[in-house]
Image 1 (cartoon, rainbow, N blue to C red):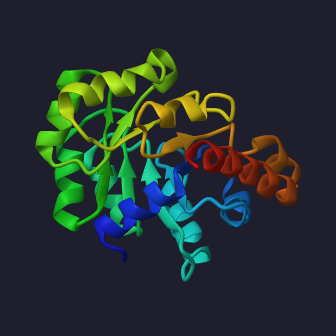
Image 2: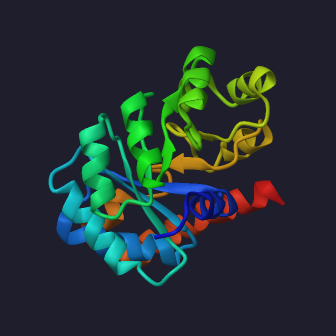
Length: 216
């Protein structure tokens, strides 16, 4: 498994984490493959759906040998974090800051990305040893909140998630985001339901192009 630093570098270099939520088990592997072929190197399988562990194992197996990193999202507690790490998660993302989740990740050398919004949550997550901070839900506060947080806390790695689109992704990077998490704006759920994985690939590629354009 890649080191925490290597996983962080892949997320930051690629600039985007694809959030795979609620995808049927029969569709998640071809969907993940198409999204990776579209240029996305970090894929997050959410842990709040049915057979999430099995889905993560299948996606990780499919993308083994590539430059992709596969992690778990919507991880609410340490037991779930442990289960997904045992399944091969390279990173763990939470919508909130749970110290036991961060501690579990640290113990196993797995990148943790707890959710934060306030200065108190930011400091709590940093002191716990979080590697990356997930600003969530980003749409509630907007891009300016990133620069506001980074003001007193310095060069902290912030990954806004929730409401990120091709239209606003540039503003988040301009404000200091190191990467973004994206769901429906990147993951074409309608195309997945239709079995049109060429369209899934094209949608992902279009989002990646928007990210690359704003970072050049």
